[in-house]
Length: 142
Image (cartoon, rainbow, N blue to C red; front, side, top):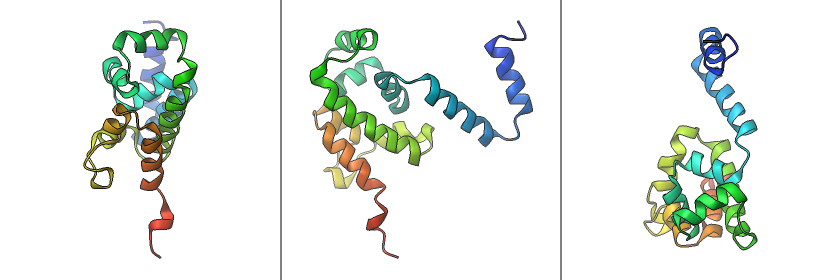
């Protein structure tokens, strides 16, 4: 293994890391820098397969795979913008490894549905509003 290979560098970083939390922060920062494509980021952070992501946009798996290569059609950008904004909020407020469970958890305030189910129904704006409400600190009494 070359000393400059990604695996060798990773081993050195792990060995030299001051803590596991430091490594998690580094990983998150690298991921934010590298994984900039919104569809890919959404799929990764929500823990979705291509087929699940396709359902969230109401298209076939093949259509979604094409989007990953060529970009999302203009008529679908509002849906992506809403889900990307919701993902940004979750990414800032929640540990990344918990996001897939959060988007799949049914909630009474969502009519016993999950954020993912709302997205699959084409209610992308409602997903964003629900996530905003989750972290609205004005609801908390002093």
